[in-house]
Amino acid sequence: MNSTNESPASRAGEAHEEGKARKALIEKRNLISSVFVAMLLGIAFQEMLNPVRDSVRVSGLRPVTAFLALSFFFTSIRFFIGNQLHLLSDSSEHVRGDLWLYDFLIIVTQSIFICFLGGVSSEEVNRTARVNFYDLLIVLYLVDIFWVLSQALLGKMIKAWRRSSPPWPWAILNAALLAGTLIIRLSFGDIFGFWSLAALMALNIVGFLIDIILLDQYHIV
Image (tube, rainbow, N blue to C red; front, top):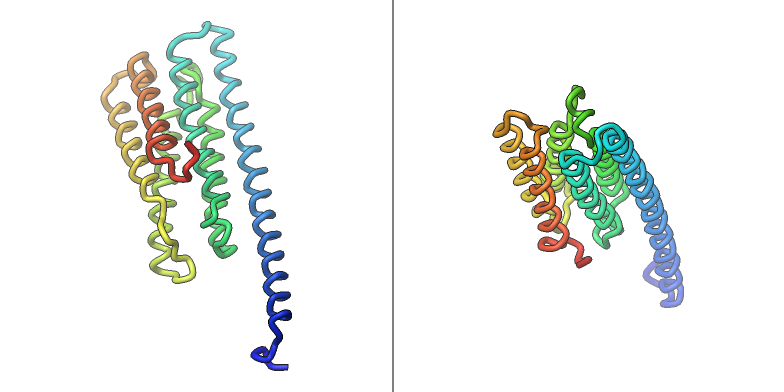
């Protein structure tokens, strides 16, 4: 029978089945993203606790240790909240599978860098590390800026990958934080001294407040 002669009941049945399949797909995506984000968040905080614990055990709780730990805390929470809400948002739930996978892989990459960032959350580790807290923080910002720019660029190159609105506020905020981090790194002789780490902590707290409270990309506050 020609599709134009299908009964309303038949079309309704097909639409119902498509809706069920779509709902099942969304549930699978949400489960995958939630499990991975939660797992990597737990690993990141465990990586942070190890050097902080060792530093406190040997030298006591010093301000520089608290500054680094808080810098990690506000940065990691900001990224994990934003990334998880992005993957669970309506716009991400209804995109093509390859586009969702691209976002997911970028977010997993960011989360892995945050895990490494947690591992250098004490002054003692950074004094001897080949790749220190500043290095990893800069790379994290660059990956996020690249992600937003690539969304816009790929959307122009591939029609099926066109998005209604790439998260430009995130790119702008992280570009500003990147500039601030570089200024701190270049302005202080000892980048792991009291004032440099205090400035870094303040910068990341401001970034957290702007992102979560002022921008509030997914309206959670």
